[in-house]
Structures are given as structure tokens and as C-alpha cells.
Length: 404
Figure 1 (spheres, rainbow, N blue to C red):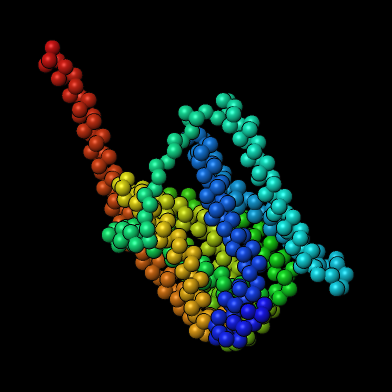
Figure 2: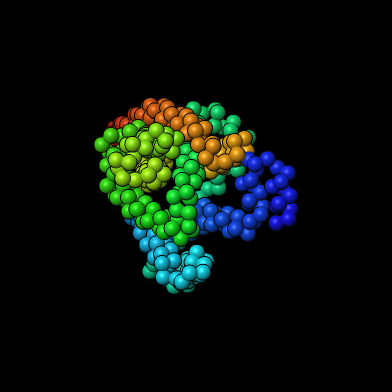
């Protein structure tokens, strides 16, 4: 803490966030590990194991259920967080309610981890050793290793292909946009819910609603939109949702002093209304991501040839994933260093967000035209091959007759 105090006194006010990370390094490390759970624990470990043990004949049936299961879990974790967070009302004065709530929450995490380990052990011991349930000949073979591409090589490949570049813009834009929105929204949340237990309870409600809306979107909206309106409309819904809700959210954050009369008629406060709009934006954008953005992004690779498909995915994994996750954070950290606080950078964040969303929409429109053209070309080639196969099959008896 002494070194942190010295750094705080020496560095400009904009570096207070970095100093706070250094001062509370144990909490920072815990937060980093929690953030890695999604990308390592779920994306890498779970899906790697699922790909290894799921039969080809079972994949179409179970993979959709895995996606629904991930959001179904939020319907249980959300109420659990709310229940534990409200323990504050039952404790006497002077007791650290948040510490007790945190103990219960971490106990749930540990128990859940042990359950995961137990299930993994049981599957390996009882399922994967039984020929009735697991036949290595029916399981998908090992995937070809993705080409290892450096950041520079990935950029070069993206710039060579307009189609792949548009997909990368979609991935980067979503990552940056959702990061910009979440930081500003959570800043408003902390002002509205200053006590950790109240904040945690709100996030529990948020998780529950997000899970429910996402499940409904996945079941009834995503597939129907793509079948009825096509790939282009489905791909543009996510940025349009972010744009509309973003206008409402930042309007109440930036112009709350000019809307006091209107807000008073609603019987609430400008801060609470900003929190509500930010909550709606996060719920709608995340549900749109899982039900529309992710499927359309994966569909965009289908018309490509095998080399472009493999190298394109590798390049986007390197550039898109990294810039998408860290780009928004770097932008905001740079603005905080220059301006001094999250509240002061809000107007600039709003401007950057809307610029990114418009670039996202333009990339979606361009990609939609290219996708339609490539799909038509691929279908035409498939028809030509089918006709050639029919003609060749019809000529075989004639050739056999002439030979005899």
C-alpha cells in the first residue's frame, strides 16, 4: 500500500484505476480468473470435451441443448444470487453482510466445481468405457489443426479478402461495443446501488431475465427470422438493437438535467431510468448475440472454399477475439487517463459507440451482398455438378453397349 500511495501521488488522476488494480492485486487476480472462466472453462475445456465424445449422429440433437443449458443455468444462478444477497436484511447491525454473502457465493462456486469434477470423472469411468454408449468409430475424428498465424499474418490475410474482413469487423465491433456499454452502465449501477449486497441482488435479477429472454429468442426468434427474412436482416438485428437501446441509455445519462420534468411524470429518477435503459440494452444485445449474431457469423463461413474458411477462422480468432475483448477496454482506459473519470468520458464513449455500430451495420450490409452472391455461385456449381453426374450416369449404358 505504501508503494501504491506513492504511485497515486506521483501519477496523474487518470491513472487512479491502474493504481487501484495494483493496490488491490489479490481482488484483481480473482477477477481476472473469473473472467477467464468463460473463455477457458467453457469455450476451451467444455466444448473440447463435448467435441471429443459426442457422436456425429448425436451432435445436431445435443449441441442446441448445450446452448440452451448454458442459459437455463442462469435461471437458477440468478435467484440464488438474489437470495444470498438479501441476507443483509436478517443480520444485526455491525455485521459485514457482504462478506457473509460472498462466503455463501464462493461456497456455491466451489461446490459447483466439485460437481463438475465428479461428473467428468463419472463419464470417463462409466460412460466412455462402455461400448453401448461410446464407440470411437462413430465419434468425430480429430480436427485438423488450425494454421498457426501471428497477429501480423492475420492482419495481412484479413486485408486480402473483403469478405473475411467484413466478418472480422462484425466480431470486433460487437466485442468493443458491448464493452463500452457495460462499463458505463455498471458505473450508473454503482451510483444507484451503492451497497455491494444491493448491487449483487440486482445482478442476480439481471442474470435471471437475461437467461429467460435468451432462451425465448433462441427457441422462437432466431431461426424464424433467418427463414423468413434471410441472412442479411438477421445479421443486422443485433447492431440495430444496440443502436436503438444505446440512444435511449446515453440520452438519459447525458441529458438527464434537461429531462427532469418528463422523468418526474414517470415517478422515478434520471439515474434509475438510465439504469433501466442500460439493463434493457444489455439483455437485448446479449440475447440477440446468442440467437442471431453467433449463428449468422458461423453461417457466413459456409460459402467460402476450404482454405479461406480455415485461414479466415484462424485470423479472426487471433485478431477479432483479441481486439474485440481488449479494444473497448483500451479505448476507455485511454480516455480515463486523459479525462480523469468514467463519468467525464461518457460523451466520448457514446460517440465512439455509435461510430462503431454504424461501421458494423455497413459491414453487415456489404457482407450480406457478398454472402448472397457466393451462395448463389456455390449453388450453381452444385447444380452443374449434379447435371454432369446425371449425364455421365446416362452415358454409361451406351458406352457399355458400344463396347460389347
